[in-house]
Image (cartoon, rainbow, N blue to C red; front, side):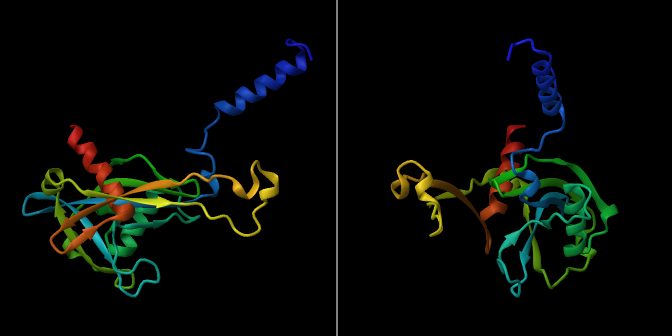
Length: 215
């Protein structure tokens, strides 16, 4: 086919038009498990704090862990922000109209099949609302000033791929001797009073605090 063949040029234009359309954040975003969380800022004694949840001890997954309000994005949620606000309302009993949004942080993508969209907002009168005790054991707050002045500590967790027994080794170079790459995950830990904040919550929190420290 000649470089300036009419059909070839049309194909290039089709490719260019396709690439100019809105692209997903990453390959696989449309089929990934998508979650949204709110980093809630509240005022306690005229000082800014970050509010955290302690997950109900009766929860099937991660009982007793510390998290931000949030959860999986439902098909009925028009945007990740809508999901974050809905989940905050369901878990903390917060009227959506009392949440003042400040902005959105970068999406957190621990794997290609899992993405979290974090938002930051102010919650007014957070002590006057009723918790959903099915999901939330209790809430507590940490002063932003404390977070700015206390670095978390880090542990490294190696993650080794373990293909299932039906993996088609005969289709790849070196077969079952293929050298899979070990991935090392950074796990951050904040310890405040009797609470230990770690996991996804700590990683998102650290990014938020690092952003504030740049100002």
